[in-house]
Image (tube, rainbow, N blue to C red; front, side, top):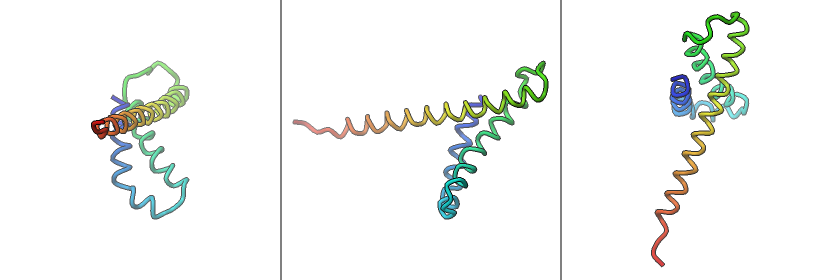
Length: 98
């Protein structure tokens, strides 16, 4: 569930704030908007879950931050694979006879 939330949040943030972030023209602002917001939302979903409540709060928080970053990396990798497959299928479908 956290992975789907992260992917959805990334897509919504990208589509809704693309024009604003491009106008800033600062690469680190793009990183802050496109990476930290989905990671924060994913962290919130994981933190509110019942996952490893027996851990000490600081250890659990650090672990969940790492997992949130890994989930974002996994989602971006998955999105890259989907885009590559789309490009391959579009390229193969445009090949004409002969």
